Image (cartoon, rainbow, N blue to C red):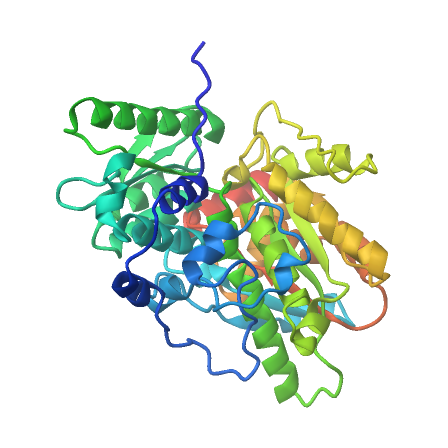
Length: 472
């Protein structure tokens, strides 16, 4: 049996590199951390980052489980360099009339992260991670020479990631748009050929290995370890950087930008509609695989809750976060149910699935990151202590319900998404789940936002094949 390989996420690697250096040169610090033009013209600007005093130190000083007190410290907006380089975009927030009619009196909004450059929300986290890596290794080349700097003689940085598809596409897309990065991606055999083809067209070095993502991830980690060992022996090959598809605080911070955008857009839209009541978001629905997106959403909510802007804090006060999965890939639900039985908030019980049996292969992590359980429990605790009702709800749909949601979403909104995203739409399109959701939301009209996370593993032919398999 191969021995387990433990690699620190990029967050911790950069922390070691930066904090082992005595200082950054003043000229470089000013160029790296200088002001970057804001990309929004709204007067409802998002709050500053909750973790530090710059884009980089934001990520490096953020804890996997930040405290409420830390969340009130002001600093520049996060992921600004990645945004300024157009590595991810501010995506539209669409008011859905068909879904609002189904869910009256609630207003349903669709956050269209399916329109990110790679096709999914993953660009947010990968863009922030990659730009932070670049800054860390460019900050002081002389001081970093003793740390097996993962760059070739020509200054390139090698990123090795594992993915069920979308994280790999994101890292390959970001690396392609940065002049000094290359990407290698290991995917399991369940990955759709359309995804492998897209990865190769983006210039990624693709390896297909293993029955499930976890097996592909073990190979990716071995590749990084072997590269580091080879580079350490003769210096002929650069050691590589391992990039997790979901389990890294830099990813979560990048993903958290979606909440900043949602609040700004909702406030602008409801102000335009001359709504006299302050904007209020009742719920955000999001798919869960390994927990990276959900961790980011909870981080974004917490940042705005404690950010010092009363209107933005009000918008997320009492918010319910709905974690959506499919049967056969419900690793969050398993760990959430096991952990919720304990009153001790630090008592997290992670449940590892035996395998992935769902059509939503992009959700195929056998086990979620422990951080998402910690953050979910803290969110629920805040709701109970304040009496506002903040909560995390776990919804598990069938493959049939996920595919049915994809088909109806395409008909209603002329957009294709894969079943992993259909899981987040199912609580609205499925009569069984919608009845439960509306009961938990209550009769007071509020805004419900679906994070349309997207996914590139879809085509007209695939959607038709899923219809034939699950809906006939």
